[in-house]
Image (cartoon, rainbow, N blue to C red; front, side, top):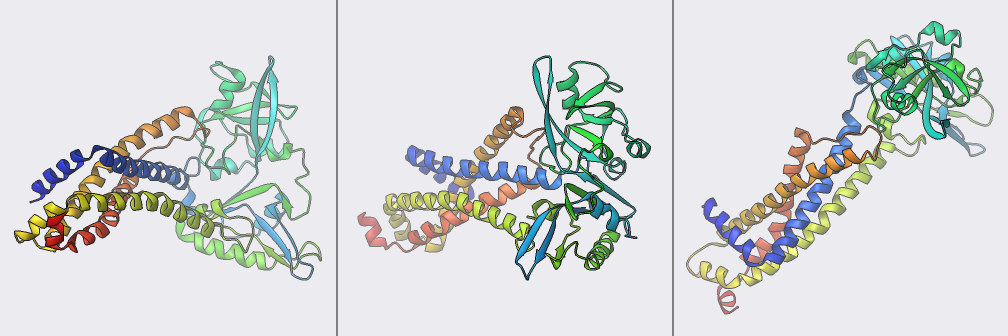
Length: 409
């Protein structure tokens, strides 16, 4: 039976080639967008280099101070002083690293401009995170305490700054008008892991900003590392309890909000207590998926209705010879699933091609997209859903056709 349905479906597709092209294009284009988007989201959510202890970690990147009386609100990143002074009192974390946000500068070499993104870190940064060193090693706690001008750079920065030198450990690199000695080179990091991505890493004691300033807001972030994933909940609870005891830094504010979050929640947090970044992200993705799938679905539904009206005489004959409405509905839905299956297959092929093009274009630094098993499974489910959604209403219309009316058409 299914073999007959397949033959009928192929014959119908060949009959009106333009409609078939429009249908397959809509399905494959929609699926391609969804697969590429899913691959990007999957990369952002699951890429754990160099953050391989994510299941044991909590991330702190935003601080908000609010005053209800005067209506004042101030938000941004916390300061080094705040994180070190209050974070050091915690008992649950086995390690804490504090590091700055992104800075950027330009250096000129032989009339050539080299753009450099850099951040300041402590020595614990190289313990909490697990970078792959191509050569050399990280700077030490002693070097940080001594304010030694040392640096760790990425492969890309090594190539951009030093060219084809086989080894650059011990070489000098200029960042923001200061010369630093390279101690190590690490594997490149994708720009989507925004809190870790940089070209150069420097000791925080070399920062030109006053990291000893006692204000609560600054330009730093932190990661708390638990002994095991089972301790993360208790560590988060300890952080929340500690925050409640912190006095306000001045009388302009009477509430302080600063969270130690799991990675994904921290990634989407807006920095404003009343604006849920996770809710915004889910809402935006949901609206995007609905818009991308709804328009092609309505289009395919209309094309299917047109095809049904063209096949009304065929439907009338089959009904006259005893075919039930249920059988006809089943046949048409199977035909539509075959159509969407072909479109889905084309969409998967297009997705592989487009992802390869995006990877080679390097639109996002060090971002390498891929289609894994979970993305393919979701794509298959999307195809089935797409086929059913666009086929149910036309099939219902077909089942309602009167035999006499259909034969006269």
